[in-house]
Image (cartoon, rainbow, N blue to C red; front, side, top):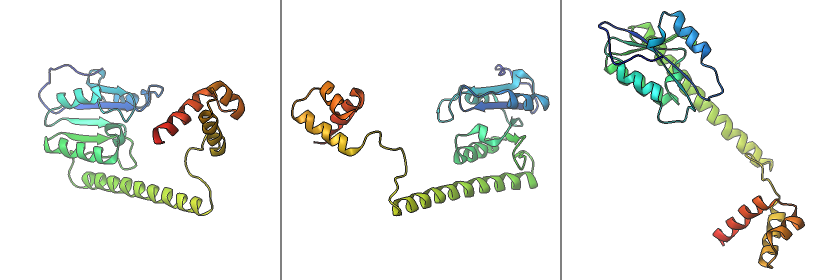
Length: 202
């Protein structure tokens, strides 16, 4: 997949597919792109985590695309790691005369079109931004309720604080890690972390 440096005259449709982990399959996206008539040589792919900054497939696609071309994706979230990145990329491409078209969003997008297609893109962006705000608000509310009722939100502590404090006292008395592990029931690897942190803050 992925085209070479030669770029024929006239607007091309260029496909892009991405999955966020190496265990996920690109098949559904590739099948959808192929169904639109985009050949393998014009499809660029990335198969790595969404937080990875360097995405070779997308970089090569952007370097190859020319004014009049349209980048086709299964859904808009494939071309960015977050909403802001998607919007910025679509805006930058539009200024270069390159369109973006999605196939399976609730409102299919084609920024190369005027009128309703552009409105649909703006609405989709608005809805995504609203959902992100609502999610943050729900999380904040859940934390507030949990704290008010004395519950802890987040990753639970692996070992009780009283055992960790006991381990620190034993360490101060000169006991070895093996002896401390036996007395507290805390594995040596965890003990090392707790005691090192205590020394760093002491």
